[in-house]
Image (cartoon, rainbow, N blue to C red):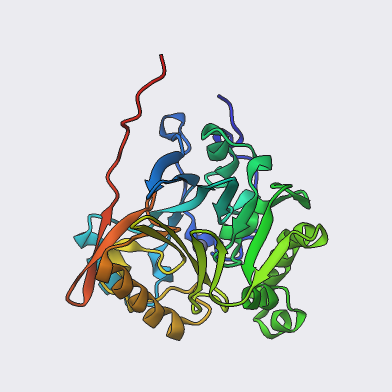
Length: 322
Ligand SMILES: [Zn+2]
């Protein structure tokens, strides 16, 4: 299959807003490394499909910590800088609803990303099938895939965003207050959302809100002003979609107080992360942080001042139709 990401075009990286261009190292686009990009699992009886938007090389010098400390933690985890970092989205089949959690990068992050539509198609769904998109926050690697050529990629979807998050990124005065180099983030966020806003397809919620039976938005401000978790609960099973509570697993599970330059408010982001880790470790519910290795779903356990990550076990036990 020929697909656009097999043939890196001369995409310039000028419009990256979340990550500076030096984040990216040379990528290997060999055909051998193409992956299926979707993974089925269930929370209680609710089917969920993890969808890969691709991976990027993340430069760990973006962490707010001494280089030697980061290098030591990476080495301990058999990892190295730059570290392969996933961008994941999730499709929840919630009754008649087809709910996406975040929408990938779209065309904004280069040829190894922007694969969400392909993953969705391989999983058997069309963009028109999506009824709702729940946005954890308005950084471009989470919303960029919603819009293409100023048009809605998901024409039937209602976009759910926390009110403060939407107001911050679409505010002219917040944009003017931001450093010049970061102002484009505001422009792009507004551009991505505008086609949905004009079609009356943006639904804002304030703080904690049950959006659907079994799916609740929970405010987790820190990384951005209106960053939200989404909690999916069914029977005794629970999964919390974590968005950007963390970026570099080998470093931040060991030292959760280490922040990253993408955190708009690092002072709030670090304690929020520790609060989230403690909460998840206490009862062992499942979590899905956007940037952990695909499918990025697992459980965590506390061990003193650090945490261990236990990814869900791979399951492929469906029986082929005859
Ligand atoms: Zn992100």
